[in-house]
Image 1 (cartoon, one colour):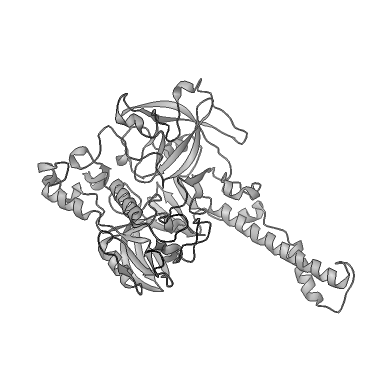
Image 2 (cartoon, rainbow, N blue to C red; image 1 turned 90 degrees about the vertical axis):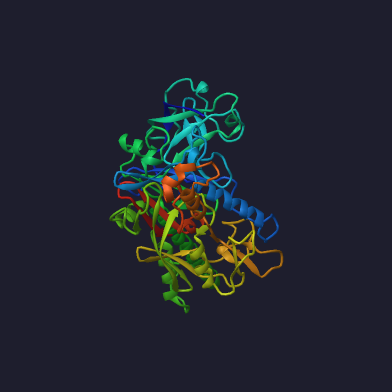
Length: 511
């Protein structure tokens, strides 16, 4: 792929929350933080992840196996390397089992990826910005394919920025603009853009700076953080420079107050109809104290932005922070415990956060230990032995513990906001084992990543012909995922995440 870096204008809205999820509260959804924040509405390409056929609640095991192979493959595109006094992750070369040296990491326009929309050029051209937490590059790719969204510099008549009505500020940012060589197979691949969110310069394959760092340098945002909040299985909010959780909490509080007032009005109307009196119509023999209580609820002033902001002391308040650990590159941290039914069954587990993984991956020993604590569960026979089943009528109560705080994971039933159908077994279920079965497939899946790769690295027997290089590199030739969990999208349905580049930490917060 031919790659060059050029400077174009990227149009960014720098104002309050722009998520269409809360359109009924647009007057409220403004920044609750003194520092500026850039908010993007997120969507999941292809909709909510489902491993079941329409109208059927049984899991398609072939679909799950295919999905698992794709997930493991993307974690195998990097290797570890010693740089100075630290261990870092870098893109593999073809010699150690990586991809084409001319191809950038990150797939565009694939089902299951989370994306935002960005406008570039004059006149503005909208492209999908695919999030990728495993690479650090920010680039735009233009191909001849009709798949994906395309930015074409030939149709950008000038570098003047287009200003949509809601825009208060725009910014000029450099990014890599990539065109495959004519006649190459890559010209048939999708067009679009990748936004790398990994916290390391060593995972960059091109020289364009991080998008976040550019926004900091331009003064568009003040804090080197981004956060992700999933509203459902197919939409959410990406915030750069801050978070959207507090705004969502205020909307939730306002909604609750509005419902309380509506209920109070209904009770007062019923009282008036029964007694033929208005609120000012004097006393009667019925419960006047109850009427006064309902009247007080009705007249209570709702939450306003200024009132809510007065209760905020620090943007970090309410978040549970966990330091990034392991080889520099990914958002890897320590999960202090895995709890099942109120009992801790696992301690001190290394985890990598990846929003594009649709379920939770656990290393072999951890998976076996976890399911041993789930009554009635068992592994499936090959070729599906990575998956376990549990009684649909008795889903486990799961918590993941970070920095001493337990967060509920995949709890409760699954409503229409998460799926187009009600799946037995609740949010922990990927569907029934088969039609009519009382067993459901669990969303914690065993992964054997790292085992095969480290063995090949030690022996030099990789399929790409590692040779003597593999023997010299030893275990560093592997992807370093042995014994590591992947905390995917399902955990973040109900838990917000904030990622701090400067302090190298991850924050969690239930909402």
